Length: 243
Image (cartoon, rainbow, N blue to C red; front, top):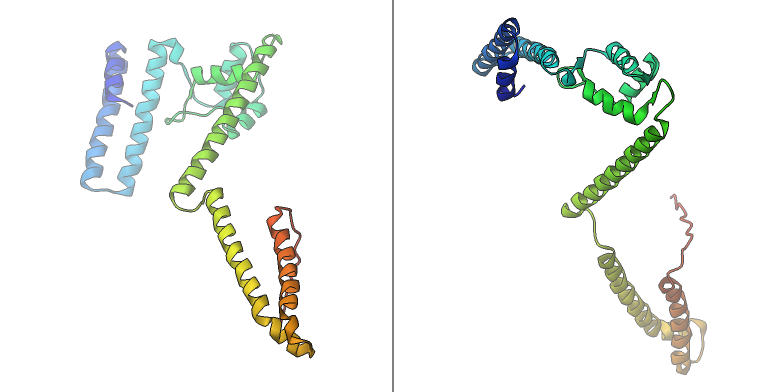
């Protein structure tokens, strides 16, 4: 707990509670110094237990000084508090909602009444059935906020991937593909011109027809590459050539 807030609380507390807080705080300070001098698993465990005790006592005293800061020790106390304040709830529902993180304890393991009030206004309805429209509206707003946070997280993940060099802009990819397609087209056209004579000789034909053969081959190449330029979707079958 923040020491400045703890100091204010000690000033407002009764003499006995002030003494209790002072003892808890002294124990935390002592164990903190001992852990700095000689880190030890047992000492760290005792320090954590002392901090938890301090937080619990501070929460109890704060609730006595300021009823609006009331704390609840467990789910059963949460259930009793909700029924006391007019909300419809069951033990099984509360355990399910707790597991879904719809409401959570603070660092000391206690449930703040103010947090339970917020949870109830969104996820529960009144014992008399009133306020259901407000509950539905609050739930819709909560779902909208959750969706907004999810989209924000996705956008942040994409920005992080981009900074890491794991993503490329679509225009950059398309430009690189276009350059490769142009080189590929020129290579095929050069191939058809260079091999026209070989095709004619292999077939025992007229060598003077080489330009015509080359034109036919280039027409076939252009037709094939035209499908690539069309932007249509393709279905390709990949055969496994096991040898």
